[in-house]
Amino acid sequence: MDSASEYVLGGTEKARCHDPYLRCALYGAAQTALGVKGGCVLSHSPQGCFQLVDAAFSWQDADYTETLTLCTKLCEDEIVHGGEELLARTILEARDLDVPVMFVLTACGPEIVGDDIVAVSEDISAQVDFQIVPIQCAGFRGDQNYGADIALDAILTHSISWDDGGAQTPSIVEEPDISKAHPGFPVCLIAPHANANPTWMGDLAWVKEVLARMGATVVATVSHDTPLDELRKVPMAKACVVLSHDAGQKAADLLADTYAIEQWCRGLPLPIGFTNTRNWLMELGRRLGAEREARALIAEGEAMVVRVCRCKGLEQSAMHRATSAVVADATVGIPLLRFITEDLEMIPQLVCLRSGQEGTQEMLEKELEELCLSPHVIYDVDVYQAKMALAEVMPEMVLGSAVEQHAVAELGIPYVFKLVNPVRRFRLSDRAYWGYAGMLNLIEFIQNDWWDRYRSKKRRYKARW
Image (tube, rainbow, N blue to C red; front, side, top):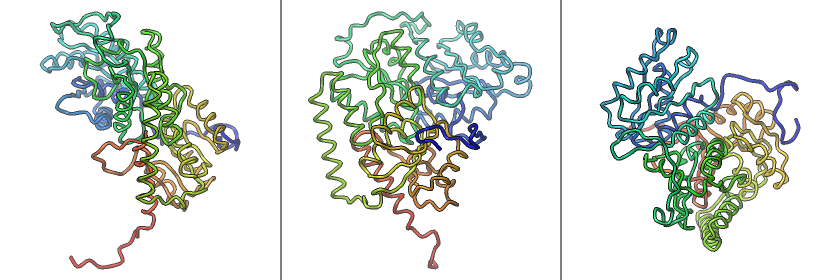
């Protein structure tokens, strides 16, 4: 197997199976649309596909008292003969709901039989008091990250706008007076939800805090807990930052072409670990003319991490020169490599990226070259391929998810650190992976999973109660 190249089974072509890590485009589009606070998401689908919308609702931590979900509940007749009439009736029945916007999402069935949700939305828009945004996101179009890009494009293209009377109005972009509207440099954040960190909202909060300290103002986040007012402010941004290596780049390109909004931090691994965080903060500091504040953030953060690890006790010896494998999305997986190599002193021998957008491969290859690493690399990996690669490499430590914990149980690999979704951990607080507190969170998860191996799986005493 060639170093840093795509994994090939049988020597000719990549094997495929039916156990992907990622859900379909409908799920990713629902994730994105549900990030708009106070909106309504209508799934034009059977009830089974609607479960994906429920799962996306949970991923966005949406408030059920503020965000509504509906379903046309397509049955055999509609799947065979078309469901446009049912879709129109469902939209009209939603007139009593107090929502400013409805996102209409399609599953595979209605798109296969030719339901035209765009035409239905245009025909019925004059009869409702909310704006309708159709999003053609059938699962067969691609994975969840592709669905996120489809939804981001639909949301930004529609440039949602309302007059004081609540009627729909054409989108007219005027040059805003930034100095009066926002005291800081206006920045737009894109695709924070396309992140395998189960509590990615902590990453988003850290980015907002850092930007505020450097004198920037986040005028819009597309999308998480995003009021409709924020979406109107997207054209006011002078810069954007894509908070994912898996989705959002197309949206950034759209903003650049439409509003001349410059993208920052493009091509940089996201801020996990000392070096990546330092590079990311210095890039923001340079862009904002806040290099002094960036250096202060770096000094404070690095001193805090060293102090905490020294006082709390880090079992570094267990990780020193331990062979390891990373199985994750590009958002977590790529920056994780430098963190475990430079800061935890592991030796990565296998990298399995389950997803990644344009530029991901070049970014990873650059990281590996700078780190003088030559692990086996698999792009667009599925569960079976990851398991076969782990069986071949047999690392001491795997940084992945609960899927890998089950997959390697029979292989005798000692440690699986469950860092990325899906994980079986109940978390009420948002734990960042980015930045300096994020480093401590990652170390804590790794340390706990390391100790967990020594916990007895058998009860050796009889309880008295």
